[in-house]
Length: 200
Image 1 (tube, rainbow, N blue to C red):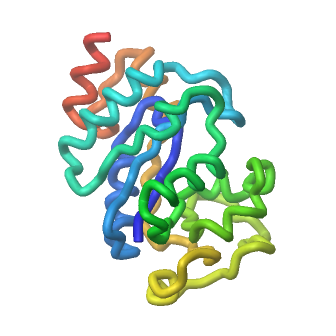
Image 2: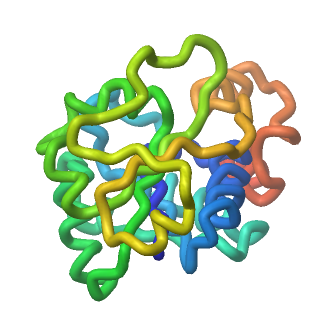
């Protein structure tokens, strides 16, 4: 069972990295892939280029050896649609079971994603917690909600799981704000990433 944690990673920060590590252990995943998008469809243009974000990501992973990078969306170019990426990954990973990790904000807007109703045929959906008000409905018509990790491991796809991992309150927006104001990044980014950004 393989985890896929997608995002703009603009830039990657310790919240992303620690969360990916926690989820890998919580679900007992064989691998955890961090999947930087090329150009997000639902967001403003990115601050860092694809090559810069990829370099930052690879630097960050030096301290998180249990995580891996998948460059599928950057290699493909153009707008990034997760459904297309997952279909290709399914082939690339020899049809191994995939757990797609998304944030609660993405879950709330999941029905705006391209072909959202096809995801349950391909993956299990893993939702990260968030602070503050929670959505009234914690379900999707196409997925079966489960809190049983053994069930997730035994079935190929179609389950929706809400993670128990602790919330790490760091955002890329806040990191970029600190960079622009020359504030300390020590608690937000790995040292190698800080050094890289300081030299841009």
